Length: 379
Ligand SMILES: Nc1ncnc2c1ncn2[C@@H]1O[C@H](COP(=O)(O)OP(=O)(O)O)[C@@H](O)[C@H]1O
Ligand SMILES: CC(=O)OP(=O)(O)O
Ligand SMILES: [Mg+2]
Image (cartoon, rainbow, N blue to C red; front, side):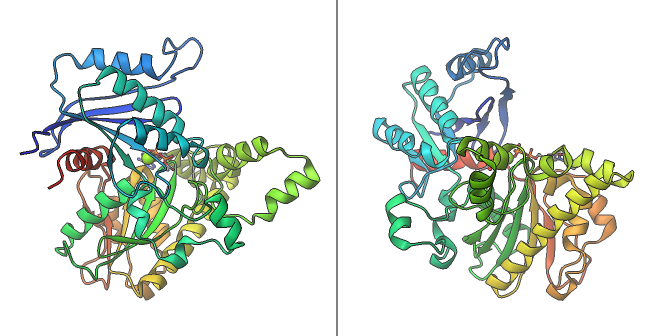
């Protein structure tokens, strides 16, 4: 008897708002859209409040019962979806320094939406929350423990809302929902990309760390590198912290290696003989395979490898190359099944494989709606 049927989900980025109004039980979408170029001069959308006003005006008469907000970093304070009040809003603000690219826009979204819809419950759903269960060994960096504690440095992990949704759908597809022994390696490959080792629906390890910069090669982020590179650039080449931030978050990854981040374009370029594109893809796939192997080792074997997000769901090429030669883990991809284009969760491994290879489209908005309902009216 929660009465929460229709949830307005807001995924606010630095210059865009993605939104969806949906029926939480059936997933039926009443409205959705994206507003881009917020705050860009000449765009006609000066700030998040104006953007949200435009979104709300476009919704007309749709009845909304609650609002769910994607917040990327919940720190140690938020390990589950949380109903927002003034205190929670302040605590999210205090976490901004840990996720300077992601949290401030999320907070701007909360402020604008609470002002516009003050009578509704608002819930913050955190990317980090699902990874609250990572092992202590996976959680800690090997640095001076006193410094780490004082400065709150540890690994958190992100894309947790996606992992929660995808790992549940994968378990259902395998007929193993609720099985505490199910060993999944999930690859969330979007613009931001990460991997996770998930045992029985709980995250044991994940590739992003204190911030969403660690781990896999991404569209514009470097992922793992030798931290001494920063010292070297600062000391010998005069880089400032702002320049290092810009280099590693915006001018690295696929963009840094090959000048572009769109996977479709890169694969097409590589296939027509572009050496830089081809090399960028080699670096991307190399890193990916190291994580698959590492997580299989942590899990003591693997029952299914799961691909999700824009690249994982759509790139036949990346799936083929990620799995090539992993027969020793029971993993293989059937070329015919891999070529099928579909929005449905599906297996792409040959019948009789030791482990499954799955493609499971993620749906962060639907998961946010579900967690919003459950936070407002715990079941
Ligand atoms: N048909 C496709 N083939 C290969 N890659 C694709 C395809 N469609 C989308 N992508 C890739 O998906 C990525 C974006 O993924 P997405 O999950 O939407 O990212 P984000 O949510 O992080 O912005 C881009 O690199 C894009 O090139
Ligand atoms: C946390 C993160 O990297 O998010 P996104 O993939 O949306 O950039
Ligand atoms: Mg994404």
